[in-house]
Image (cartoon, rainbow, N blue to C red; front, side, top):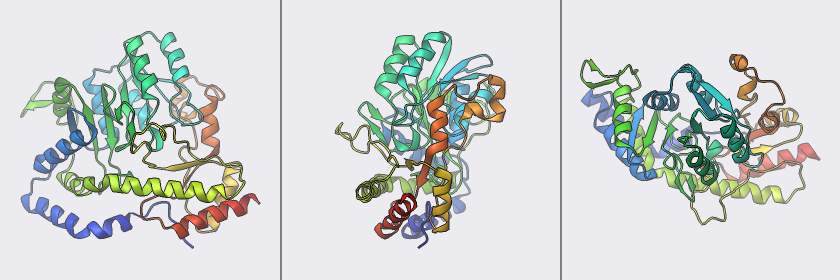
Length: 375
């Protein structure tokens, strides 16, 4: 049996006619950047996550970058975040000449550790922002993080690139802190037909500045108030996302159902793996985990992955090297062992196939092959 990590063709097939119709309409209009499709998407996403404003941009990475630019992050500024995340979380900070101040993760959720965050804030009185990451589709401890942001007077900016649709008791991912951002990379729970992203925030002035910065800092055409960039979202990507967004909660429910199937199936075996935690499962909040990825901890991970590959099961490692150990961040002076939980996660975690169209037979096969490996 072949089990892909993700099969976007299965999502595309039932929406094909509608998607092609909307793409053709954009092509016929030749309004290819921003425009009515983008305005429609921005309003829909803002309403969906309860943000006052949403600004469509060219990628999730550019969403973070333009937000930091709008906030005036500059060389020498210090931004506190996690080293166990996708590269862009820290690279956008570094691209502006600011310094990422890394904080270790909670070993259960893989999200930023609140006690470690408080220790970092106490020794970094000039921190300009806190960037928690809602990794794999489950919110970080936003109650604790927001309380610390208030205590130390530091704004909280949410990296919700993997978490559109996830909910926390305080609200929707991306719309709890001062601002947040999403990625619409094709493999995300809401994916475009290429790169696209979005910033969300509550402050109208900040939103207006971001809108200008995404278009070279222009509010009036050819008059540049700020030095911005070309961060505009394509109208075709907006059209695709407008078709897909109404299905997002249904797809999220499908992912959670498949996560539940894994839990039940794995419970029939005694295995040394650790399944992903659901820390808000008893909070009464729907969509408490949207499973952008289903991440297990696995002893002998490399051998297990080779076994699964041979059996026709695709897996992935997110992420094999913690950011503080990356060559490009060597100038920060970190050493192995500084962030032990991040380093341990990088060595032990493995993503199993999870997507709404995954069949129970395929999942049972995945579980059977993992059980066979550990026998």
